[in-house]
Length: 173
Image 1 (tube, rainbow, N blue to C red):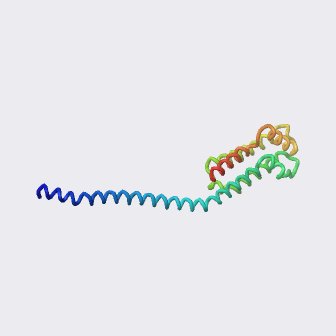
Image 2 (image 1 turned 90 degrees about the vertical axis):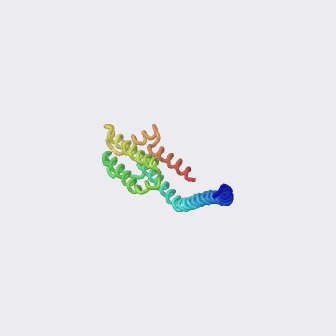
Image 3 (image 1 turned 120 degrees about the vertical axis):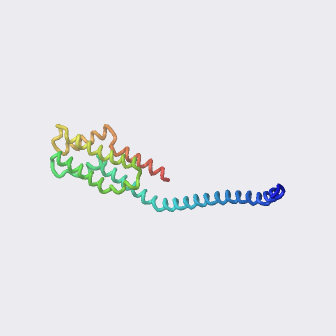
């Protein structure tokens, strides 16, 4: 093959190579865009089904926090006797029962949100135990008074968790 034949061969094949490379580039770009579009559609469909479930979990956890809030649980759970220790145990058992009833909701909320909820539960139990452990508490009325006075001095432990739930739900929208 001489030089002229090689040049003629290159002139014939060069446009085909250029067209092939351009076609490959556009096909590759189109494929990536289609894949991203399909992934977006699947994500949107998944969110359509999971969003109501997640919102329901946030609602249930809000109810949990409202039910274990010290001020509300004192009025909801009545003492069965005049013994402050028994009443404190009854309150704590009620809080634990409420919490256990809602354990499954943790799969629908963030780890940080669940940590806030656990902290609120534990802080509420600690508040009740500390109030019941005071020497001045001899009956249920005094226990209730001390707990309510503590709530007047500082906000309930459940308030921080409720605020965090509200913040997280707003970020879903």
